[in-house]
Length: 295
Image (cartoon, rainbow, N blue to C red; front, side, top):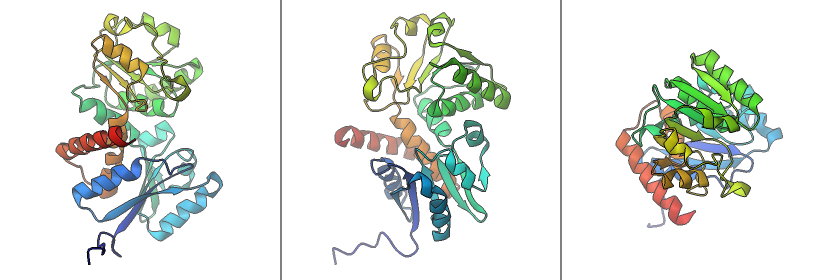
């Protein structure tokens, strides 16, 4: 009788992450850990979907009653054509990473906005009335820009290797949120008077760029009175940007908590409830320890 598993029953709901490739995803670990903590009756897995099969996959998932899905590369934009409704933030970002089952079809959301906000807020820092320097204007940068604008930053400086992308993103958030957003080149960031929070959404520090920082001058952090440096990268655990800031006594934060909090935000959307902050902190702590020991 010890081999009988009653965790999965005929009433158990199914959730999944879709992408290509996707089997490396950490999402099943996160969501099934939430299941164990909350004792909700669901299972979560990863499903690889080739780009040419995305439409059929969404229709099939809906027909099968899959209650919610996370969406990762390369489907975050293309999936928007398959949805009955798209949340404002996701529409502005032009990317969806969370689908919720409804009577009319799947609704689309982007929880990266919530994830980065929770990660920063739960470290004791606020966005409201702060001067933010955002490095990068790609997919992650879009989410970070919308977060900063939506949460009432004082000024948002967007710096990108291609200035045109920074200009486009600054105009988008200014038009949609009334934010004081300004595009500047990477060379011109040193001319900013003061910066409260630095957010890096570029790949500088990741993959072939390990050991490289988008900010070359270590004195930048003290000279600009920086309060926090946040990097969306979490592999490596401490990027060169974070090492340099930390060496100057500046608090730093990598992207792992953002990963966890955006997953929790997806569950709050799926289940229509807010999880207590104590549960979120417990989840982050346990997953942070697991990841550093096993991944």
